[in-house]
Amino acid sequence: MRYLEPRTDVPAKDDWSTGLILQDLRWGAKTLGGLAVVTGAGAVTCWLLPSSPGNLAAFVVLVLVTLLFGIGPLMYRAETRAQRRGLLDQPWRRVAATVAEKQPDDVDDRLLLADGTVLRGWLEDFPDMVLERQEVFVCGPDAGGRAVVRVAGFAKMENAKAEEPGEHPTRERVEQPLGRPLDDPATARAYKGLRWGVRAWLWSAVPVALGGVVVLLSFFPLAPAGLVVGGLVLGLGLLGIPSSVEISRWYRDAVRAVDGSAQWTPVAITLFPWQPNQHVAGLAEMPGGLALVQFVLPELSVVANIADTGVMWIAGTHDDVIAVGVPRVPVLTFAAVQPDRDVPEEDPIPWIQRLRQPDFSGLPR
Image (cartoon, rainbow, N blue to C red; front, side, top):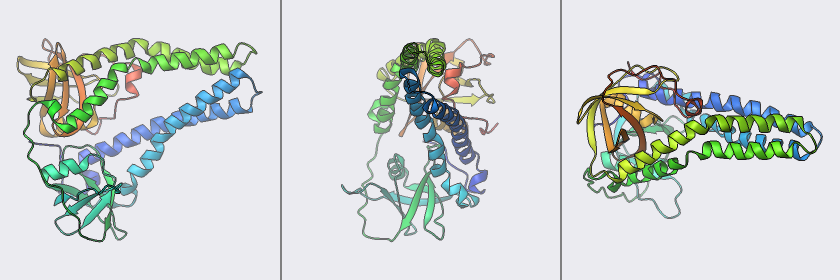
């Protein structure tokens, strides 16, 4: 198995995949942060207006949206801490490592490095891959014991802190043959998210319902601010209905593809240069011949693995839809296959999908 790996011969900040991660975090923070400022200002305005059901409803909606969008900038601060501390000025080090057995009262995970360092942190899905590959990529620790880690296959970084070595029983590594996608625990976790995607129509249904309630409450007594806020939310929801219904169909087909799949299928693929507001696309050597593959909702780790290895792992096929993932990495997305085309057509993606598309301008060309 070949996975996405950071370069170890250049400073980490100059590694293209690390740059792609930082670029995606920056894009999300700027986009969501800007929206949070606008909706927050609207919430303050509604709070200062005379009390009425319409103004109160508009205030509640704007506060909820501000809190939702405000999470992005806060996460950006935490996730880019290593960059601000200069840890990414040094190259990634490939270090042999294993994983400590997690005790019932432990919140954090521990990685046991071959040089004796013990790194502790909330590492989410990293430990399983560290155990599988028996290695980790590390920058640090610095004088304060702070470090940042990456694992093969993942387009993300996690913060960790060095602690005093101690007696830590290690997890046993179990060989996992590459079989049916849903037999892989990591893919099974990602599959749950795929199933939730079938409800993508809620992206429009919820704004339509909220906007409609705010508008109705703003008529008696008349509340212009409530009418404006409710009308905007209602209008955005209505505009997104065609796209959200279509996306629900894509997810449904992808779920069927994974359900009916008996094995992973690796195919060679070459990605086209990415253009903003366009689908991520590539030319793949599918079992039936060359075909254009377009990712409707591209997932950062999936695309980065493809760009680094030149291989796309298909977790199942249903009609013209393929479910795409990375074995032993909890990511799944889907793509449309067009056997009769070899170049993507100019087809800007709908605005509702742009809110979920990472910035892929850092992909190698």
